[in-house]
Image 1: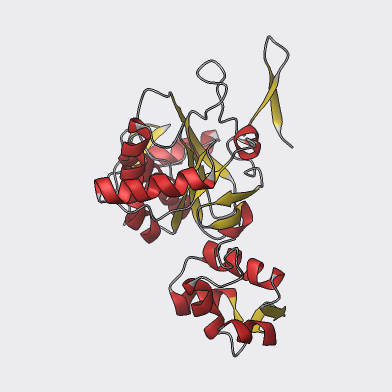
Image 2: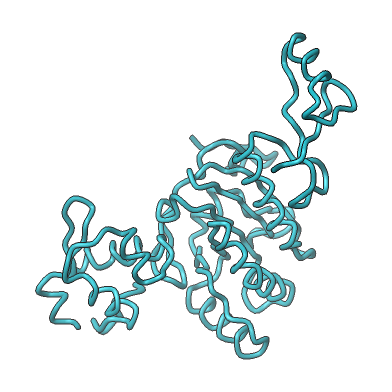
Length: 222
Length: 71
C-alpha cells in the first residue's frame, strides 16, 4: 500500500518507506520496456535526475557509469529516471559518449507521465513541479527498499557513498551486523546490541568482541 | 520495443538471442550463455513472447517458426 502525505494545499504525494516492498512499475526505458520485477534477484540502484542535457546531471551520469562495473560485481544494477522522453535520453546518452567519452551502460526510464516519479515521491514541488529531484533508492534482491537518498537540484550526489552504502548493506545482511559511521570495507563492524540483561552480562565478558560498554561492541569480520 | 524495430526487423541482440533458442533454455541459462544481465533477458523474452517469436513451457523458452523466419 502506498503511503500518502497531505500538503497544506490538499495535494497528495506518495513516499515509499524503508523496509517495505518497492512500488512496482512498468516503464519505457532506453533499453526497452522494463518492469521492476525484471530486477528480482539483483540489487538495484534506481536514481532520478532533474533533466537531460543539464550540467550537474551529466556529471552524475558519468560518475554512475564509472561505478557500474563495481556495482555489477556486487550483483547490483543501475536504473536512471527523469521526466524526459526516451528520444531525449538517447540523444543525451549519445552526447555524453561523444563529448565526454563515457558510455552510459544502464537503462534510463522516460517517465513522461510521472507515474514512477509519483510512486517514489521523486518530485519535490518546493524545488520544481515538473522535474524530479536527485533521488536514490537502493532496492535489494528481494525488491525491498533498503536506503533512500534525496538531494536537491543544485547538488550532485557522491557515487562513492552510494557504492559504500551497497557494500555496507550487503555486509550487514551477510554477517548479521551493523556498520558504524564512515565505515569502509575492512573496518570493524558493530555487533547487534543485546536485548536482555543476561545477554548484556555475557556480552561484556565475551573476548571475541571489543566492547566499550555492554551496548557498544565491535568485531573484525573474518 | 528493444528487440523489434518499428519496421518489424530485429535488433542484433534480439537475433543473437533467438539463434541460441533452437533448444529450450531457461532465462538463467540464456543470461549465462549471452553474458547479459537477467533484467535484460527477462525484458527481451517478454517482448519476443508477445511477438510470438518464441514460446515457453515450464520456464524454458524456444524459438518458433515465426522466430526462425526472422533470423
